[in-house]
Image (cartoon, rainbow, N blue to C red):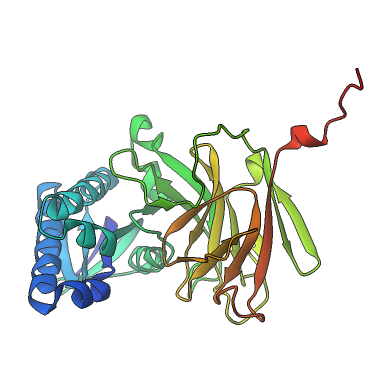
Length: 313
């Protein structure tokens, strides 16, 4: 029987399970992944949702209202931490397994226990743009929340999702209830002045981003904030934003994003992860800085006070 329903569609996916199998072996890794997916399904039910199907290392679920989906996403992130905490080799598990969640709200077609429709397609594509331990949603999900819960979301502007002609307004759920996953090479206790902007330069295209200009999406799509025309660059490849008092770059791609700071040989490889940007360096999209042909964006974190005239007294 076919039914047309208004539903919040949630996709959740565990990433990093392949590395987990390599590090822990088939039996233990399979146990961790199976336990994690089963717990996520249990959470869906406890939050008033329905699991439509499991998808390898993740699942698809629907909720009558957005609030249930948000509660489930929060609990999933917290529960994944509880699964790995305190267990043997928990550090390995915690490092390997990351959870991405994406939600959209709208009309769905329910047929023979499965669901179809634009909201399903948007949520599935939005999952591709989620970083490690992130929950992404659409405007329609926010419209169904109360003011308190809407305040937990931050706009990521519009993203070009695969298979859609029009970009979609996307929001990220504040991660206050689970740990941050941002990597940084900056060490030391010397206080640094708060940066005011960040300059990005690719070939002859140089732009400075600050304040309302952020977040900035780097990608091949003409709708990207900073368009980089190279076949190795995804349509929405990476995101530069101001978060927690620092500039951060987050990988959104399949081919990875690579960061190298000026004066350092080490390359940070981001696979759906994030990195704090400081000083100067390069961001390479889809290829490592060791490849001389890599699409390379030079970055320079700016303090505008350095450009102000000073007294000669």
